[in-house]
Image (cartoon, rainbow, N blue to C red; front, side, top):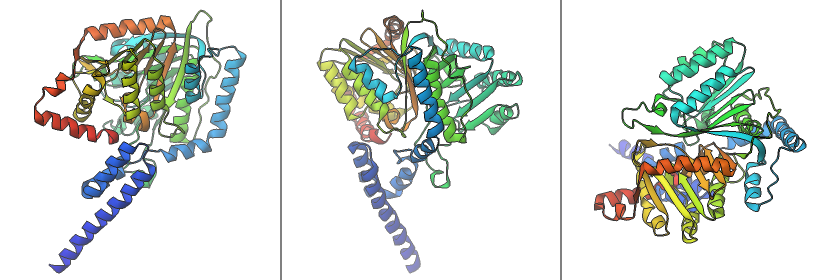
Length: 476
């Protein structure tokens, strides 16, 4: 019996000791005070549960990717520098000197390019119809990167089309996130490898010391054809994105098709991710294809936990602060940090028409509860909040004033701000902003407005659940 007591108290001591060490690590490495405090308190108070969770979710900086990028910097940086020089020599850089544009260009480390053509792709049928046509038309190579790929009807169709093009001699590079594709059978990828397709997972858990690490996700969705056409947006490869889902039914999402010099800029984050996974840089077309009648100014903003700055979060704060008349944001998840929350409140107090749309139906209960915890704070500042009711809302879009818009992969939450690898396409064009506005107006017609009473009139247990979810927001 005495031996069991010694073992028991030894385990207790070890867990509490590890909890203190992990709490110090969270305080030392934490990117936000809220997140550091949340982890530190939980690790000390509940080390038996919190320590394993911290090993899995606690990392905030993807140091392996940073080191890998440095080792590949010579080749990748040469490509980036050569591309910038080419864009400048061909007069493909937009010369807008407004400080709002210059800030974003510094964050992206890329310029706004001109002479681009863009097409909004609404929902799954339009998106994958365009992507599959692009694949069918490919002559040289295809880059494919998705967070999630399912072995279902849509996934099989993608697989078949890629295999057919590989048999025609088209080079194909497919990159997928190993966490997002945990349910994908190995046979799905092996069939493509056996047909000459270069297939790799992103390897966010590369190395024995990181086998339990589930925090970092490559959330980018990219398809590039021959360096001439690119597709970016919110849709993954699954039947549910086509509106075939037993729970959610209709699936509302948005992608964008772009042509012009911006396509080369989309290739840069892909080759950086590909190098991390393979230590190779594929040979691609870096010669921009454009027409002067294409009028869209486009900037490609990639972001992730390997960045020097918190690129995505800074971008959203800057965009919110730059809005003069209108700021419409649609996001499936709303878990902002204090900086973004304050920027939204300030915009509302300045008299900007701030509208936020989130889904009525949700696939993540704790995230949905967290979103409701901010309701009083933002509605008091004059912000209008809507819930999309037609089906599940998954698009990530933003409209700023009458001339700027965004379509991409970033949600309005801490994970996109700091942990996920994301890519957003920014547009400086009144014409394109008008198309985004038309799309959003239709979405608002399929939504209903909510107020702080939708929280204050709820029963006590519901409010308590919302408060608890809010406490967990920094580490979601």
